[in-house]
Amino acid sequence: EVQLVESGGGLVKPGGSLRLSCAASGFTFINAWMTWVRQAPGKGLEWVGRIKSKTDGGATDYAAPVKGRFTISRDDSKNTLYLQMNSLKTEDTAVYYCTKVHCSGGNCYSLYFDYWGQGTLVTVSS
Amino acid sequence: QSVLNQPPSASGTPGQRVTISCSGSSSNIGSNNVYWYQQLPGTAPKLLIYGNNQRPSGVPDRFSGSKSGTSASLAISGLRSEDEGDYYCAAWDDSLSGPVFGGGTKLTVL
Image 1: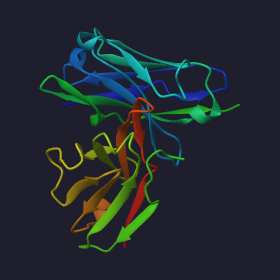
Image 2: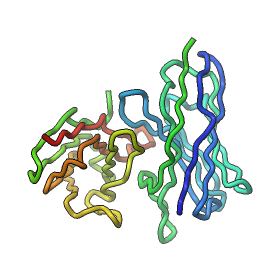
Image 3: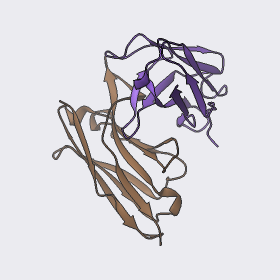
Image 4: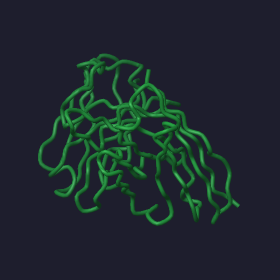
């Protein structure tokens, strides 16, 4: 059974930093493309960024609002995905979901999120 | 303001057919596949439709998707009370070089 379990959320002051983790199990993590998607309270979904598998180059991509402040990384030996968030702003307050990208026949489909974690809440407030 | 535009709400009675629209532009829906996600209250989103009109295994055929030009639609037939929740469209945007979502449509089953 595929499981994605996020942790690390909490309350942080504007300008502060936080690192989220996503522990993965039930699939071959080393081959997976992974993303972070967030949802502000009472609002819609927003793609945060993506990391490809190392076999596909390990590249990262970010949404414009977080580029230069957030960093996605992975530790394939621990089956864990990370989101390092620096220079946090009040508008970063959201539930952050870790998602697995669906790959089939050698292709990965960047918007086909076949598994989601339960989410972790990040609150940026003074 | 979301890049993809959805009506904020939709409603129907049990058994009815409801459609939810999603409008975009040539840089997103017009040139890329559309995806639809369902988010039931208090839960993480779940993929309903990929590739404009394909259903992942396990998604009932009551759910169907279509695309024409720079717009897409999600249709739900045989509406059930358990369909109540939020529905989001999504597509890759070539101008932004990333995925974009609609603002979501809250479906109420009366």
